[in-house]
Structure formats: C-alpha cells, structure tokens
Image (cartoon, rainbow, N blue to C red; front, side):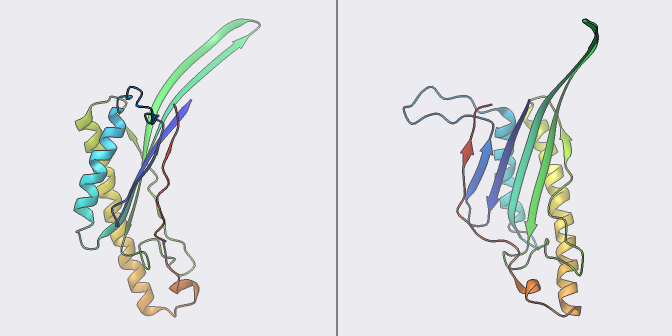
Length: 184
C-alpha cells in the first residue's frame, strides 16, 4: 500500500496540496485529526517559504512530496510458508525553484536539461513533530542551495550563449491551485 502527501507554495501565497488524508465533508461530520507528517509539512512549508522567498536569490516555489509505503512479501511452496517480510518506509522529495517564473534554476543550459527535483531522502517513521520538521528543513535547505547554484549557471550561460526562441520561453507558469484529497 502506498500513500502520498504533496504540498506546494507559490510566491502568490497560494497553498496547494494533495494528500492521503480525507477532508471533512461540508455537512460538518467530526473532523479527522491531522496526521503529524502533514502537520510537519504545513509548518515547514510556511517557515521555509517565509525564509527563502526573502533570500538572494528568492525562492518562488517550494513543494513537498512524502510517500509512505508498506511493503509485504510472502513466499511459499507446496502449501508451506517459506518466508514472509514486512517493511515500511517514508520518502521525502523537495522541489525548490529560485529566480522568477520567466527564468529560474530549471532553465535548460546548452544541451542539458537542468534537474528540478531532489532525488529524495528517507524520513523518520516516528510521528515526532520536531524530528520530522528537522528532516524536512535539512532537505529543503539542501535543495535551495542546489537550486541557487543552478541559477548562477543558468544566468552565466545566458550571458555567453546565443539565445533561441526556446531559451526565452518562461520556465514555469502561474496557475490556479488544484486541491485533491483522497482517503487513505
């Protein structure tokens, strides 16, 4: 079984998320408690966006995706159980864009497309808020620094290379957020 949480923040201050947590219906049924990992993502998104949107270069987009996976494997032969194993893991991916919608760190440099997302990192399975927030912060900081370095390369490349029509196209577009909540 796999569930996934995604949070993002744009410069315009719009919060977008899709999560594996059901929102309460309009008929005011009892509210489902917010999962600690989602709470940690919200808190870190607010803190990180407030900090990095004022940094140089400014971050205009930050997105978090947490995948929580349960894995079971059972093996048998002739009706006898040979082995069984269960495993659970959480995986965090952070996307940070610095610069502007017109020109950011994901801009194509030469023949190479810039990387726009982290390869990810494991996150604690414990629902300890301070531990989760620290892990999210560390990955966000790492991705912000990588994006900042990539933007320097993009700007340098633009100064020394001839620009094509593709090279002057915007790197990202400002769109209305889409919110999606699904039951686990």
